Picture 1 (cartoon, rainbow, N blue to C red):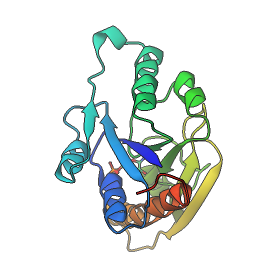
Picture 2: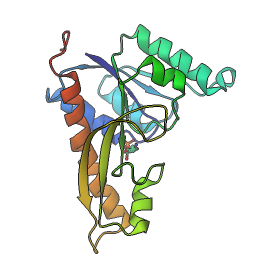
Picture 3: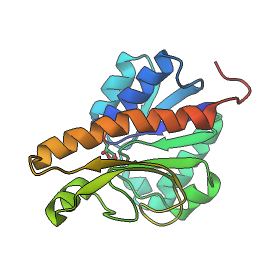
Picture 4: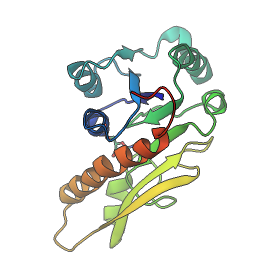
Amino acid sequence: MKFAVLASGNGSNLEAIIDALRKKKIKGTLQVVFSDKENAFALQRARKAQVPVVAWRDPKACKDRAAFDRALVKFLRQEGIELVVLAGYMRILSPVFVRAFRNRIINIHPALLPAFKGAHAIRDAFKAGVKVTGVTVHIVDEEVDHGPILAQAAVAVTPADTLASLEAKIHKVEHRLYPEVIGELVKGKKGDK
Ligand code: GRF
């Protein structure tokens, strides 16, 4: 199965996916890494692993989100993409994108959804003083940080934790959980390498 990773930032989850591909824990093909940020570190990681990368600046001609997403859908279809993996992709997907890849877009979120949606989930959970938070992998629908949950893993917050130590614990769990889920999704599909 051919899949794409969409990333805007650091790309540590992408790195974990690339590692799992190398170890054959994911038996699919990472066809392309796409970014809306030309200087995303995720792109450097992909290039280093010799994964094709494509980056588009949010071009002025494509100011409107739907137009950008229509062009992206076209591109991903041309690439034969069957699964879209969001890994720190900071653009909200427009309905046009969600419809085009219905049930074939997944996301990882650093909290136990439906708790702590949004871009600062780890910090928000830490500030709220929860004793347990975690990681969620879910199918993406039209709502932000929402859709059928595929997997969750809990992370305990101890009195000794700082925001930084909690972030580190959550990312470690992400890097295990996301490749596992992707491995399951692509398993047994024809055309796997
Ligand atoms: C992760 O914490 C992920 O849960 C969230 O964005 C972050 C991306 O990190 N959606 P990275 O770019 O994979 O390092």
